[in-house]
Image (cartoon, rainbow, N blue to C red; front, side, top):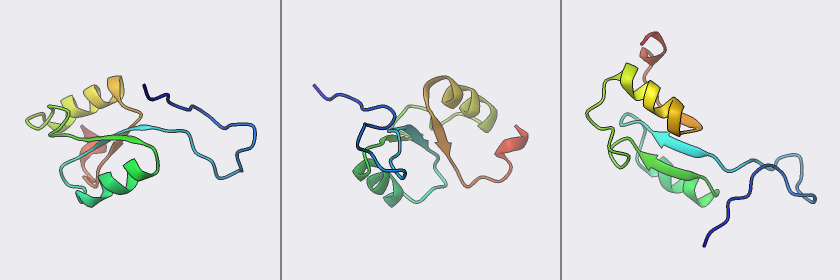
Amino acid sequence: MRHRRIGRSKGAGLGALREMKILIDECVPAGLKAQLTSLGHECKTVQEAGYGSKKNGELLMLAEAHWDVLLTSDRKIRYQ
């Protein structure tokens, strides 16, 4: 069983980050998932999460309910 570490441990430096659940949009380079996972984050692409056919507004609502971060390069998504 894998335990998630949240926050900083007693010996952690100032640069220590909390593990995050990151949803990666289709417009983000696929290689970024591997990099973020190697840093300890839980990552899924929109397709892997089953959200591939969702429009931006619906995707935002789903992401907000289940993910810490929606990683996108879509500049118009903030207006949805």
